[in-house]
Length: 68
Image (cartoon, rainbow, N blue to C red; front, side, top):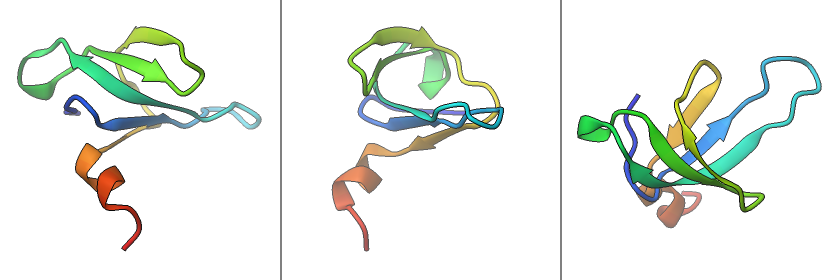
């Protein structure tokens, strides 16, 4: 998985009832867009994040373009 500053991260819950978390990549600590990432979650919390299963990265350009 690769990400860039400004990309949106979505973490889907692994179990029924788990909340989906969304956030913005503030910093890429790995080489060439690899994890770990510093993410500001939509609740305002910032954390170092290493993605696992159930994670989607949406490029910042896609978010800026909006729906087709």
